[in-house]
Length: 283
Image (cartoon, rainbow, N blue to C red; front, side, top):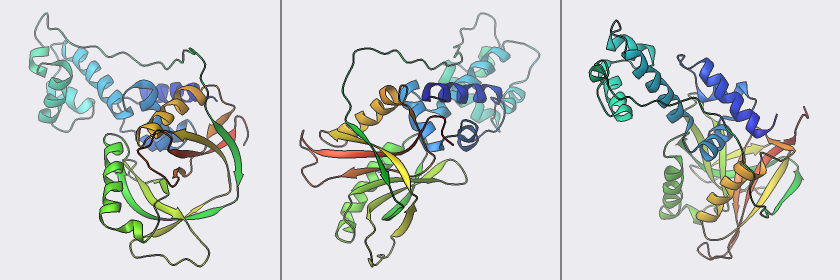
């Protein structure tokens, strides 16, 4: 299944369970990919997060339902995942621009948010430097932190990098890697690590931990340009240009960004994105 099919299958699953308390992990498991990759790819191609999409769809349907006079606001609120009429009213007002009680009046203008379908339109060709590399299992030594899986994760990761340097941790472990780790059980957070490849006999400093990365095939993308913009742009291109036509799919495992020595503000600065992949259709 290619990346566009994966996203559309995920959307179909969301639509089938729109009134259920589904998690990002459940959606990702249904389409056989990792939760972090699904959320990142969805956001890049759809222009909003999975959580925002679900909220928009629910509030759109809730508005339509409130036009029927025989329903209570609290019943609609509960149906669409809100525990109180107050929380529902706030979300409803932000989306529709009016309160739920107003939506029940005649000739009220409500907003409609239709089901999303992902399509890729191929335009002018452009060059992406990448390679496929086989790598034996290895270990990374990282300082880890919980990061929100959806809204604000980029901001939190950038703040974490700032903390890493301000606290002098770069003197303990050279920060050449930014690693996206496992999704935590609550499905709302994942572990992000900053650090380096583990060396033989290396001691583990206080507050650091070792992550074991399994043997894997990697798609490695070369990024040239000032940080963080160059690597952010490459992530967008991977999901919008490479994955839709590649003969590979991303595996639910660690992925990381590799930073070389040099001036990170230079237009010639080189970094890399490493994604665990397998050929389409290979078990």
